Image (cartoon, rainbow, N blue to C red; front, side):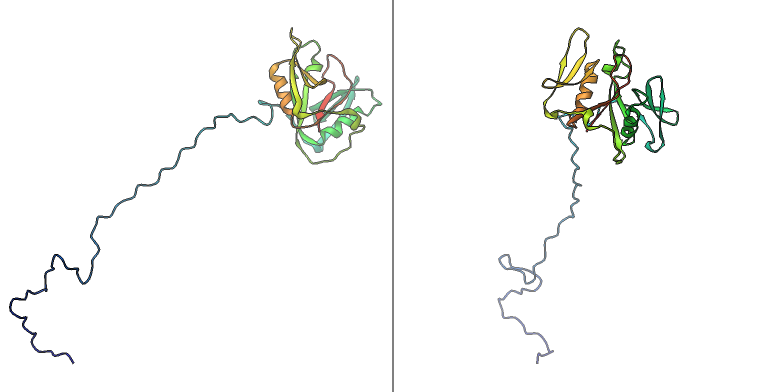
Length: 221
């Protein structure tokens, strides 16, 4: 048992280790060095870098489209022209014989979509109808039957499309080798038509062809 009496006196000549530390000795209990707290600068958010390559648009821009309700379409025939209507709004028009299935074809086509879009429908060429290009957007998912649809369509290679400047104000034509798909009045319309055609592999036409009226519909599949 430890005595609670007086402490022993150290021998003469001995130095007391109490209250001081020998330079060469290691303290019994090591204390961490005291340092000032540091404030870490917030990480910088990297700035987005602009793409060096412009994004190619998926569709012609700006678009010239007629939006409509496919559930409210009707067909009107007058003076050799079938008109597809949403109420009083004209969605499309085709020329044909009153006893033909042209009106039925146009209605079935329009019921597959919600927007009918155009390139060059306001062109001022003498044979304006040849330079008016139309396509369809916002599909409804309806699988309507277009009479004689396969006969109205012809295939092409979408990876081999070229534009040919006819010169002398003759416009441009879109081709797959010698297969001419469509004519355009301006270079801008031609490039828009090529953009649309590159997403499909068949071009189709319904309605009677004339030189001056916008009386034939084109569509792709």
